[in-house]
Image (cartoon, rainbow, N blue to C red; front, side):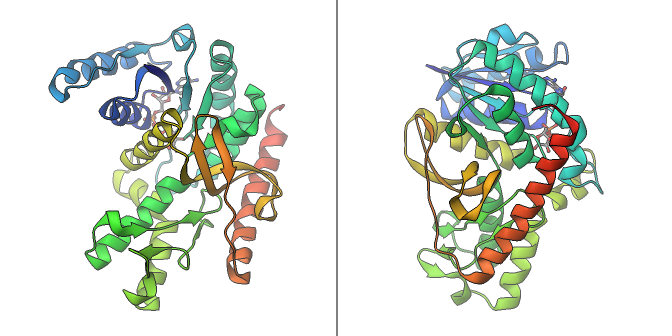
Length: 311
Ligand code: APR
């Protein structure tokens, strides 16, 4: 059995373990600084395995030595947003947390592939690459799967069509300037405009961009966790099963989409080696302009990071 260590056993971390166990693709180690909490959640989940009929070992711990030889490390450690906060407001606190987690985990699993969930996502993924020293293909940020799923869910709610027929693609940074690509999205191959008028579609684009904030506003004490963690489980399965699945993820760009030196949401092929290919869409001028605005925001965040920590 493969091994996945999930760092941070809070809302997103424990829910990631839950979705992973359902998929029965790896044994799981749940790590947190809080004493007893990861152990308690892991034991509770272990006691659910006979009910759901999955042979998965789930270990809760405060000791990074237990993560030794992980195939995948998932980083969820860090603070979530509260109402009124942007993801960028988390930068200072989460940079220190993610930096230390990256340094601790790479010691025990030098060959792991990293999946990052902590916000601000694109910058924390950059931080992880720098702190682990891993090649870019092995450090992947989760954002696009979630943002695209949100858009698909809103389209399903509007049209009544099965979510399995809806294909949406949201690229760019994981912030309010993310870019839902309506022209590339479709319902069973039919363009979205055939199902709804332009105003409706624009409202869905706006709701997608603000999707994380909508949940924060409702929960009041934290941010979304079911859908973000489900996205991590899908990415992990694509890697462990070497599926060559194309999913929108935050990948380090070296000229693709006209960007260099940042992690940015683009379609990538996921397989056993991590990011095996970056897929380039043909974009029109409006789409390029929107992506550039989003990239500018990510560049600014990375510059802030460089001013805060030594990389
Ligand atoms: N090492 C390990 N765990 C840590 C560390 C650390 N250095 N620092 C904090 N943690 C743990 C906390 O103890 C907590 O249990 O990270 C966990 C975070 O859990 P939550 O507070 O429930 O936050 P969550 O909703 O999971 O969000 C975590 O993911 O989606 C992003 O924006 C979100 O940045 C946030 C992160």
